[in-house]
Every structure is written in structure tokens, then in C-alpha cells.
Length: 309
Length: 227
Image (cartoon, rainbow over all chains, first blue to last red; front, top):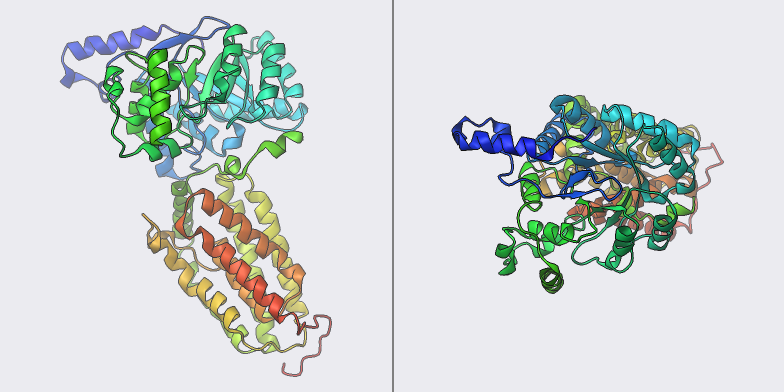
């Protein structure tokens, strides 16, 4: 997926909106009013919107026609709102195929396709990558990551070779829920990877100590998964009034505040909340717009979330 | 493969409760009215527990074998595998249990089990009450009812009731009890209110079996004074 100008779509949307909102197509009418803030991928300088889309659990709907329709709607809203990066894995059941259906239907011009290798043994990795690519219905992946470091010693050379041959643009590794951080650090320090994917949120902040600084030092992009602790965090904060600082950074919901906390860390390239709700996609994308909290406010957000959740 | 120890159950839960129950709903719609046949089959099991005749035992064991085989193929392989990558392994385990139950039908043994309240209760619960749990769940409808012989959980509970009544050897219990743990854990991860039911019933059956162990059944004899 070659990068295109991120501002063109928004400029077009703004022009049409200015010329008469009623004439907007449903897609454009649903677009976020303010362009998504982007941050460069450290290894290339390519700009990526701060908010992406995860697919764990939410897009694994099997053959259910309603579930598939809803998933396509979620992705339609995501692309319309300026989103680019969608992340999946062979571990996520039917999610890859559901994404592929949306790719085929929506034909997004600026998709950043991020997937993973998750199989024991390097030899099976090649076949798995090709199977995943067919399910996604894309000519190639932008980013492939070694999922949870499974057989990373064998998969990483394969992915780096694919990158050298031009069959892949970026290579990464992933972990979640704070697992194997010591090994993650070792790989970050020794391997020429472009991305690391980790869990990070206002309560789980271990990565601030070593992994996020190391990512900046080594020019490695950071993708953040499970930003809401699989929904537990937003559920714990539901009904609790938003503190005064929320208005200062344009947040109307806790989900937006939690996302802004994450993506405002300078080492973070993109957060990938997963959802099966169109309204939540819209809400999540808004967190990637407007003013971001500074370091002092980030501390206050973390303190308040810790106190209230 | 040292990486596997880092996974927890929640890592393998790849679907939402909504997807899970919609899968059951579409499966129910696809095979209706097979549920009526399953109900009749369930009655055969109940009658066999209440009237310990060898031909009824054979029939009930065959009914249960057919139910496990059907669930292995139609549910695990054809449907559940769409959202759960472990489903083919579950299908294999259910197929093995179906074969074991066929063996039980072939060699029903000669002991005459007394009807047991616990066994009756479990099988009756599986066949008549378990489907109603769909209505007790938030957002659940009767279209998502889990019916004996159609989906795993009530099929397994009814089987435990029969195994208890017949004092079946341990080998027949392994897969049903393991399933109760797997399914119970899955439902707990999905935050389903009745997640505790399946493990609790398995525990009840195992405890009742242990109490009855004083009077073990001879599965090697084919003589049957009341056949």
C-alpha cells in the first residue's frame, strides 16, 4: 500500500462540507471534522494517523452475515474518518477474512495492512503469510510482526528477507499484557525492526520505564494494543464524571481521554483499539484529533484514572 | 515452544459472547426441527436411567453416541471452528467419546443400577432446563437455546447423568469432565452469568460417583439377569 497524501481526503471533505453539508455523501458526512493527527514512522518518516484499528475478538464473527456487515460498516467508518492502519493475526479466527471482505468491498486507497506470523517453526511461516495475504485480499502487507515472539528467531530473518526483496515494507514484533518484556528489549536492541507492538494504557505503564525510551533511541515505531484493557477500563470508568481537564483536550468520553493519554506519548506511533461499533470508531478517531495532553496533564490523567478505575 | 507458557486463557478467547450466541442462533435456525428429534432421543436416555433394562441401556448409549458424533461434526467442525481455532480438537475429542459410548452399548454390563436422584436430576436438567438458560441471559432469546444432542453443554451434562446412573468406569468420564472445565472457563471469560453451572454439575457428578464407588459395576461381564 504506497502512502498517499493524508491531507487530500480531508481537504476534499472540508470543501464539500463548506459548500453545503446537506449535499454530503453518507461517507463524507461521517468523516471526522478535524484531520487526524499523524506521527512519522521512525524508520521511514512515513506519516501514520495516531489511531488505528485492532481486530482481536471484534471481527471474529465467522460466517454470520450480520456480524460481517457490521464489521464492514466499522471499517467503512474507520477509512472515511481518515484511519489507515488495521492490525490482525492468524490467531484471530475469521478476522482476517472479514477484513478481506471489507477491503474487497470498500477498496480503501490508503490502507496500512498490518498482520502477524503466529506459527511454530520458520518453514511454516512462509505458507502462513501467504494464506493471510489471500484472506486479506491485498497484494502485499505493509507490516508483518512476529506474534507474541513465537519462534521469532526463525520468523524474523524471513520477514527481514521479504523486506529486502520489496515484498514487505516494515517488520515488527509483538507482545501483550506485559509479557516477556526483557526479551522484547533484547530484540529491540539487536535486530533491525521497524515496529514493536505492546500493551500500554493509563494503568499499565511499565513500558514507560525502558521499552518506550528504547524505541525512541532505536527509531522503532510503537503500536499500542489493548488500550482499554479489553473494555475493562472503560467499564470501570463508566458513570464516573470526566474531570475538568477533559474539556481542555477536547474529550467528551473516558475512551477518548484514555486514548489521548496513550497516543500523546512521543514514542507511540499508533494505538489500535478494537471495536464492533461504528459509534465507537467515530469516538476513537476523534481521540486522534485536536489538542493532545502535555507531560503534566498526562500525569494527572494517569493519577485520576488510577483513583477512579 | 517455550513461548506457550506465556499465554493465558484470555489470549485464546478470540470471540465475543455476541458472536458465540449468534453462531448458536444461526445453527439452531439451520437445523430446525431436528431439535424435536433430539428431545425424543433425550427421553430415551431418561427412560433408560429410570428403567434399568439392558436393551434400554444399549439404546441410550447409542443415542448418546449419536449425539456426541453429531455435535462433533455439525457443531464443532462445521460451525464452532469458524470462530475458535481449537474447535477441530474438540471435534476429535467428541468423536472419541462417541466411540466409547458405542463400546458401552456393545458391552453394557450386568449390574443393575438403581435409579439415582442425582443422575435423573442431571439428565432432566440437561434436556428440559438447560435450553431455558438462554432466556435467563441478558439479551438472550429462545432462538439461542442450547438443546441436548444439538450443542455440547447439555449433551455432556446428560451423558454425565447416564454415566453416573450406570456407574461407568473412569475412562468414560474423562472427556465429559474435561469439556465441562473447558466450556465453563470459556463462558467465564465471556462473562456469562451461568458459567458456573457446567463445572458445578461436573463436580456434583464426580462426587456422586465417588460416593457410589463402593459398589463398582462389572463392565466385563455380558450376563444380564433382567435383559
